[in-house]
Image (tube, rainbow, N blue to C red; front, top):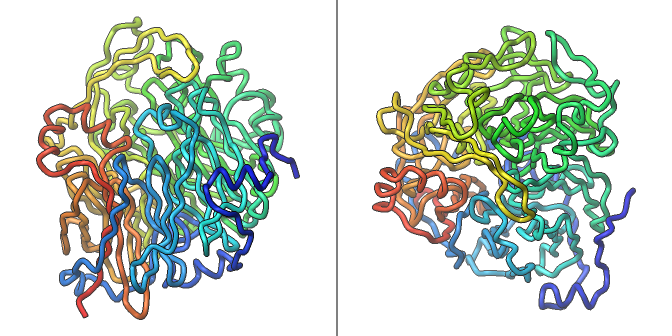
Length: 595
C-alpha cells in the first residue's frame, strides 16, 4: 500500500483544522448490509450499481397525489446544492456546496446532532468553472466522508462529527478543485478531480477507509505506468472486437507534452460491481476545446473506464468522443444492470453521454453493444459505427478544418451537454432507464489560448439557445430501453432538467426542475404527471427516499447554481424567464403521505 505524501497526522494540526477535539470513537456498520435494507439510503445512488432505485412502495402511483411536506431544513448556504442526503438508521446526513458544511440530523426530532464546517484554503472556491458545488457525502465503518472543494478528503466520526483523518488530494493553486461525492467500495474511498476548463490532468484515486493512506492513483492521460494501463492486457473496442490498447496509447495521441494539461477529469458518479471487482467511471473533455491547437483523439479523455478496485489497473477502456471538437464529457454516471440486449441477457453498463448518445456496453468485456441518440437534437454526429466504435461526424458541425475564429453555427448539443452530472435511474422491474435531459444548442467559435495556472484554459467562445426543434423547451425527462437503444416515453420541460432521478417499486419516477418543482410521474408513462410541488429554489440536487418508523419519505435538495446556473444564464431569454420562478438559497424538503 502506497502512503500519501500529503498525510497530516499530528493531533494538534487535526484539532486546529476542525476547531474541535478529535475522537476516534466509531460505530462500525458494513455498507453492504446498509444498502440491502431499503429503509436506508446509504449511498448517493442508493446502491453500488448506480441505479437510484428503491423497493419502497408506500408512496406509489395511487397515493403520491396526496403527498405533503413533512419537514424542511435550511442549509444557510447559497450556491448550487447538488447531490442529496444519505440516511442511515435514525440519522440523515446532508452536505452543502462551498464552504462544504455537513449536518447530521435526527430523524425523530429534526434536531441537528452535529455540524461540521471546514476551514478551507483561501480562495478554494475560485477555480471551479461552474460554481463550487458538491456531490454529497459517503458512509463506511462509522465514518462520514467528504471531498472538499480545496482538494481535501475528510473522514468524520458519524456519531460526533469529529475529524478522524484528512488528506490533501490536490492543490487549488493550480486550478484543481473537486465537486464529486466520495464513494466507498470495499475498504477504499474513491475520489476524483474537476477542472477540465483549467488545464487539469484528470485522475481517480483510492484511499484507505481506515486511515486515509493512498492505495493507488490512476491518471487519464500520459504514460502507461501513470495511468495504470497494461499495453497488452488493457483492452479497447475497435474493429468489432476487443483489442489491446498497445504501448503509449495516450502519449501517441498528444503532441509533445500536451497531455500534462490534457483534462479528462473525474467529477462524476462512480459505480462498482463486487462480483467482477471492477470500478466504473467516466473521464471529462480535453482541457482546451480548440482542436486546431491539439492532436486528434487525445486519449483517454471523454472515455469510459473499468479498473480493478484493489490495484487500479485498467481492464478495459472505451472513448465516446474521439476527435472532440465540442467539449463533450463522459464523466456522467455509469448504471450497471443485467438486461436483455437484442435478445441476449447481458451484464451491461449503460451510459448517457453528454454528447447526446446512449451507450450500452458489456461491463465484463467492454464490448460496445448499442449506441443510439437519446437526444434527438444531437447533430454533431449521424451515428456511432458499431464496428469501429467511433462516431460518424457531420462535417457541417465540426470546428476543424475551419480556420480559428470562424464560428460553427447550430451545433447540438451545446457544451452544457445533453445531460449534466445529475444521475439517471434504472427500474429493474420494467427494465427502463429514467433520464433527466437538456436540449440546448450552440454557436461555437474556437480561438488560440495559452496556459496560465489557475486560469480558465478553454479556447472557445459560444452562445447557447434552446434546440429549435423543441419549441423553446430546453429540457425534459425520458424513459429509455437500453437493450434496444429506443426511446419509450418523454416529457418536455421549459428549462434544462438538472436533477438526479429516482424510481421506486411504487411505480413512480421523480425529478426536480430548475424552477424548483419536485415532480413525480407514472413510471409506465412519463408523460403522466402525478405530483408537483414548488420548493423555494431551483433544483439541481437528487431525489432520494427512505423509511423511518414505518413511513416512507422522499427528500430533495433545492438551491439553484452549479453548471445549470451557468448554462441557463448563457441563454438570456430563458434566464429572464427563470428569474420569475427562483432565487438562490439552499433547502432540504422532505415529503410523506398524510397520517
